[in-house]
Amino acid sequence: MEYGNRVLIQESLVQVGKTITLKGWVATKRDHGKLTFIDLRDRSGIVQCMGYQKMGELTTESVIEVTGIVKQRPANMVNTQIETGTVEVDVQEYRILNTAKELPIQVEGDGYEINEESRLKYRYLDLRRSRLNSMLKLRSKFIRAFREALYTEDFVEVETPMLTKSTKEGARDFLIPSRFYPGKFYALPQSPQQYKQLLMTAGVERYFQMARCIRDEDLRADRGFEFTQLDLEMSFVEQHDVMALVEQVVKSAVTAVGGKIKQDPFPVFEYADVMKKFGADKFDVRTEEEKKAGVLAFAWVVKFPFFKKVDKKDAAEVRDSKSGWTFTHNPFSAPIPEHEEWHVKGEHTGEIITAQYDLVCNGYEAGGGSIRAHKPEVLRATFRTMGYSDAEIEASVGHMLEAFEVGTPPHGGIALGIDRLVMLLAGENNLKETIAFPMTSTGRTAVMDAPTEVSKEQMKELGMEVKENK
Image 1 (cartoon, rainbow, N blue to C red):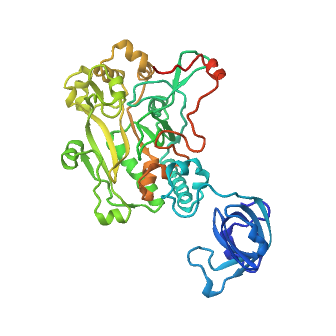
Image 2 (image 1 turned 180 degrees about the horizontal axis):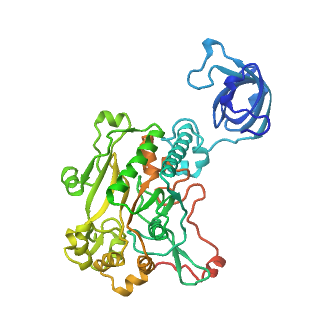
Image 3 (image 1 turned 60 degrees about the horizontal axis):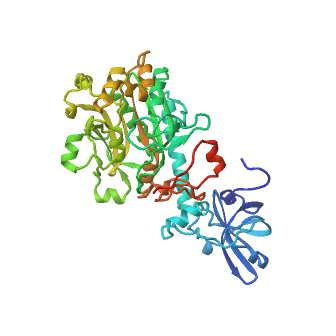
């Protein structure tokens, strides 16, 4: 619905002969003596407008309002590059709503040639280019398709807290100091893992959310500090149940936005086999022709080892483990049923297989999940294998152990990387292209240029001070 007398540009196609009012941005301007032509852009498209010489005062990307008569363009002057290329607007009057000065970056073209620092500093301009505007629409439509598919399967969307506790989840936490509890800290969620398991204890049975997750990890093209995942969990299920439902909703969402899938159903590989065949658990099985056509090749990987030796170059792994062993995916996973006894007794650590399943696509990990530990002795055994005492386990995940003692059903779920999936759907190779306001490769925020220093008064309120490293 539009307010007032504004008409969307796309609607001008059916307004031939009528006087209409359009509002938008001056995409281009061309002066031809007594006549000035502009291409006016709004969210629905672009249309050519022609007016007398006075329109020459307009600058590109200024916001204007025009009122004029919609006319059919001559057959030899039709612009086949735009949807409204068969019509133009003969401007009777116009009004400048906001004048744009000289732009720090241009908004025409795909923007790849502009350096990242400039694009992100002026991201509100960068997003005006049609490629990125289409990306935001693709992302929105994709998320909507996921939601609709899950609502159909009786899932309940539940939001979980952003301020939580620092626990061992495989990456460094971002810590938030507490003003009310000096010297103590909240942690921003690496994932909603523990809360979604607690929702299973609560009897929700089928949960999901589009979750914002924050991890202090080393940055790269396909990973940032912040990311969005489709997070879901189901009670009273086994591994094949979760995989079947996830595959169903992924296919539904991908096809809803015009994506092409290589193989249906998704093939299933065992971890040991893919390591021998591809040398990695993330692989691409497309042909060259399928790559050029933008086909998505999904596959499952199962039967992962539960534990691995700590990588001494990984600070988070070194910090999390006290025994030299750490989990490969998630400490809240369960072993496969036939290895549960080994796990609880702390035997055959390197041979224990976890009920973990990863979804890979075109050489990337698109999602990861597992059947979870739902009995206290199973979760406790994971941390014992990592070298934690009973007191340390209680301090870290005692709240989970307590929940598991009051009737928690068997459950499992998955987290799908929305940013990465949109990147693959759009044929991009950088996550930043799929996010409205991404961070730079050095971890600075777009536009607002954080992190920054804060005032001494703010630090004093928190009972903190900054000391120089010597």
